[in-house]
Image 1 (tube, rainbow, N blue to C red):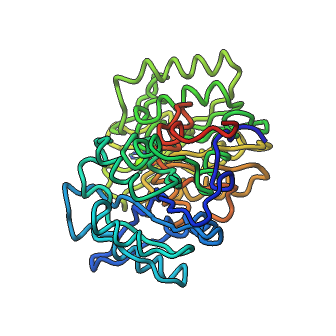
Image 2 (spheres, rainbow, N blue to C red):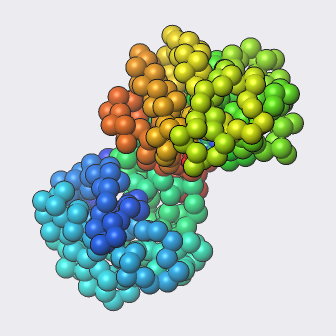
Length: 398
Ligand code: ADP
Ligand code: MG
């Protein structure tokens, strides 16, 4: 297996050391302020448990939401409570992520014990990657671990600044994410297919262009397919399209043809007069979407065409729902494709915030090889970008 060239927690001595772990505990909260979905907390447990077993003093830092300064509604305290349940051990909580409150908590940590710091984004220095704030975080620890893949595409103080001040390595979740996504784009088993969807072409243009250089087959569904249909001169009624991207869509289709990449676009769609008019939804051919309707899902003919396009593939990367799956009338295409991809005898990797939500709503996460925890970060990796939070970590051979 190729690819993963960064040191991990397994490559350094952490015994007795104060280890700052940047985790992604940006979890959804309920109205009453408890953790609504603890997936992200559970994803970080392998790294935390490994460090505990090694006798490290574990200091966890995360952001939660987008606070503008301290905000009790975005406190990480409820996360500390859930983490205690999951670890079956006490988790100390520091009222502030830097300064005296943080020091007091860290000083009291025994080897193998765990503390969680308050929301890093209560300080504007976090997102500004302020060197002083990074220094204040670094003062708490001897070693830095980044396990927050979902934030690794941002150069913030806790993802980038601090990594320059302490020996910096990847956590086990970070390692797993980089392995699966990295290997898939570097040396995929073939045939290799990409399935892309979601609302817009614009947010995924870079990824689609780069994937085109790597894949054998490209399946395009969801809202972004409308722009590709329109680029071929097909009238798409009132569907969402990005007129300024019609030339880019044409270029992608021409490039695919030059490269011999098979492109599959919807042959039928579920259309309705508006998002709200779920009762009026009907299947129409993609070639003749009525002027007063908008395409909001792929139809059963498209699912069948996409299934055939993916037949025999040995690797599939999927990013972007096939329709407005948040509404039951427009969810069938996405659910059907989730089952089609999950059913392949192939390496299957899913990324993208909404796509992952769809897969877990359908209870299918266990049927994919890897479900990425990072939306934007996974997309940037597919684009071939180097994530600043990864670049800052020690190289394996250093
Ligand atoms: P991800 O977060 O998985 O990367 P995106 O953010 O690109 O996915 O897109 C997800 C959104 O795309 C969903 O909220 C869905 O409602 C929307 N979407 C999918 N198909 C359509 C469509 N045909 N028209 C409008 N919106 C769509
Ligand atoms: Mg999204």
